[in-house]
Length: 392
Image (cartoon, rainbow, N blue to C red; front, side):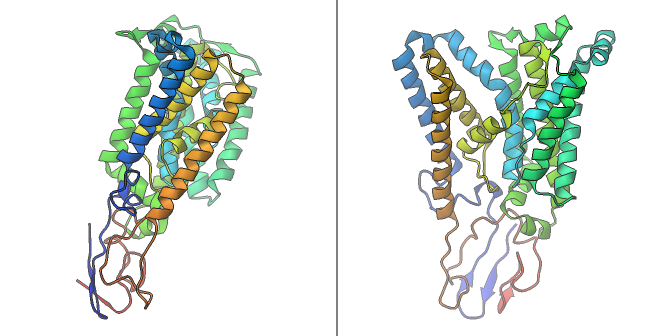
């Protein structure tokens, strides 16, 4: 969608809606880091450097096929949760409750009543229960944030505390054992040598990529995160969409809970501890802006792999977890600083002496897709013509 305005003071300013995924990426022209391809290429280079370090420090132990599968298997749960987190952050929100939701879903799905029902019907009942618990909790988060007008940080922090506490109450602070052998065989098995957990992660990431880049839902997510008010004026129901984003995050938490149950054969209120911080870190390292409006699933996958590979290198070299935490903190800070550098360059404008946009015109950086042509017709309003301009 696009519209153009002809200024009465001379010159023509063409204001067109930029594709939402690239709205913040065009400010630096054709620079290498100005687009998602450039950022993802940088992540690939970083991952390659880590692999070289692993080969130098750990040798064949790092390059062994079993170790590679160990890295992928360890990254699977975090990877699934990070896909949901990517949508939430691109949409301008944050979800601190994902770790607690994973614990709650795993506990609820492994209660005696649920497992008995699974024995009578099919182990898919365990999967269904975990996903429903996660989605309902996500729905509560979304409603409180979108319609209750509570800050996402506060709402999800409250859910983190409440969900973890409810999981402890249900499990009576005990670890619940998964008794269904067919369930365990499926999620601990492999297909053509690839662990089932890795395949589940790949499917979730692929579905997330399609939804984010090839559907209206994805375009609206970029729009809401880029400028919620302009998105509202463009006809997007921002509150409803926000609720959907948190439900989606809850669904990924339910899937992750199933994966943990299959890997550990347990449901516990301690599952997912600090998972929310790891997911946010992976998403940020993957190039998603914390202020919303920009991000990629591919970048998130690479961010997860970078984190897991770093963990693996530290483990193989018998380095302390404290040193590992320091290294992770440094990586997060560097990633955010790089984001700020790129984002700041993307938001610069050139204005004429009169305060209006320069007569040469150009794309308004940071505007979500559809915000211009779908906006208000009021002069000077979002998406509308400038005062003293004729709309054509």
